[in-house]
Image (cartoon, rainbow, N blue to C red):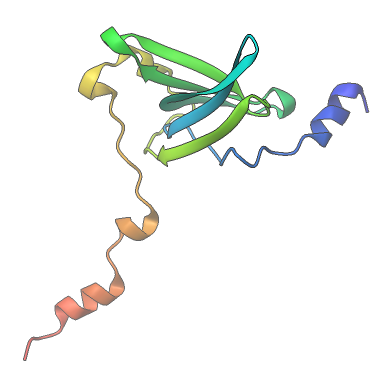
Length: 135
C-alpha cells in the first residue's frame, strides 16, 4: 500500500456535507482567510458536476451573477475550508454532468423540482375516502 492509498483510507466523510446529486440547489459556506482575518462566504447555485475519486473528490457549483454572467466554483469534498453545505432543493435531471446548463439563460435554465416520493403519489387513504358514497 502506497502513501496515497493509505491517506485515502484514512479520510472520513465530512459530516457537514450531505449526499449531493447533480441538479441540487446548494448553499456552500466556505471559510475565507484575508490577511489575519477569517470570514465565511456563502455561494449559492446548482451542482452541475460531481467527481468521485477518494481524496480528489470534488463538486462544481454554478450560479448566474449580475449582468447574466455565469460563475462556477469547484470545491474539494474533503476540504477543511468548507464549513458546511446546505441542500435547498433537489431537481429532476437525466444527466450526470450538466454542462449543457452553461448555454442556457433565463427561463430555459430552470430545472424541475424533484419532490419526495410520498408527495408525488396520492395517499391510499384519501383515494378510498373519495370513492365512498356520501350518505
